[in-house]
Length: 573
Ligand SMILES: Cc1ncc(C[n+]2csc(CCOP(=O)(O)OP(=O)(O)O)c2C)c(N)n1
Image (cartoon, rainbow, N blue to C red):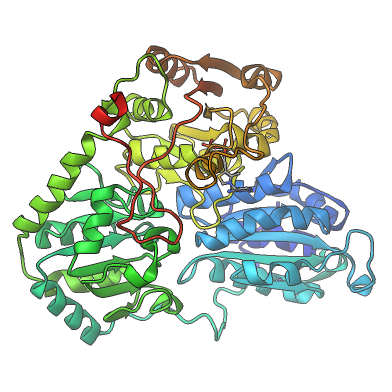
């Protein structure tokens, strides 16, 4: 390995890549080699960086993403040109939609061949332009170190996101003086300004006047590390908190004023509270269509304050009364002393009444009559782990049941693809999370459909010798799509019944322990057995096939127009 402390030294572009990563504090990268990135792979052997060889580049992208979400550090994935680069794109878009700090490095054909349809040439900077925060093509080795340095600064600054650096093969092979700039001059990447005092004052004024205020807490709480100050703010103002899917873990469900999740599959009393509120405090969230429902009827009685680091989100979907363009933690630290202690007893009592009513509709309180529901599995997983595991979910019904039944007390313990809704995310993202947080218990929760999209990464899991637990919530359908067909397409189940392999045998084929559970009283004993084993295990939970996630706001409907689960009496009738 070369000595980092020396001044400028001549070296190859390939070496510069690793020198830059070391200086950025990167200890692990996820990737897959090929011709156009081979010089860089050749140099890897000389550097103390762990390279995780994936089975498909999409897996590398999700691993880098899971690594970043679990740790708050920048995740890095590397691939060759052409198909290697295009295989990354789903993972890049996933990181983009959920604002995850990631850097993607791709090899490119030699600069002289650019534009010639050379073997494995694709214009990956063109392809990823709309799904990266920034990207760059390096044709000259002298630009390499600065471009990589800028990539890391941009990925983690302001609203984080993915950056792609495409490096021509000749730029990797050529030599130049290596100079790593401590600071970079990026006119478009301005430091986030502190909140303006007049905005804080206007927000505080609305808070003092409000009788039915509600906090909508999103991913920004986690990204800005605002959980503690949010808690202090809630304790002082007694304002209840509703969370977005990506905000879960940002405010503890054990707190009496934590209401749980809002939106399409949020609790009915939470959505009702949003519609009845006279003040919404939107903290680090972006009024996505899955949380607002129909915009024309969204929260009609409320004034709105929006605190958001990305000013382009302000006023984008919902018109608000006070816009605070700032880092959320800084803004809350300014707002906390500006507000007076308050109590909102009548308002909280009204919400609580709704919460109690919801219990009668909860599947956990309904007679199971021997059936195993996904909700049982997720509730038991929460009980068994004391809510302290990192859970990485895939996309579909199981994702929503996890959000409803696994109560995340700590930030960064739920990792899920919210914005893009990427099936196949869970297994690779969990591998990334486990490598970022080796001491943590990490669970994959995936549907039988999504799991099959990236199950090849079981080999990566085995090769890396990791201890990861996998729960496949196996309902024999592409469950969430089947639910939409049941509700909105007259139960015409086009292309949703799904044949799966024997997941237990599949796990064993990869040298991973496998179990099957199809009755409820086997859930906790099986969880206990695999949790203590010290190595990876997969459990195939055969759950009720045609079960739906309730409540549900149909896409584009009024937020209060929820389809609710029938109450117990109705079920029995
Ligand atoms: C890559 C991708 N393709 C298609 C979809 C559309 N989609 C959303 S949920 C879903 C069904 C998921 O089924 P499964 O993985 O079995 O989970 P379940 O809903 O049954 O829990 C589909 C097909 C998607 N989100 N991502």
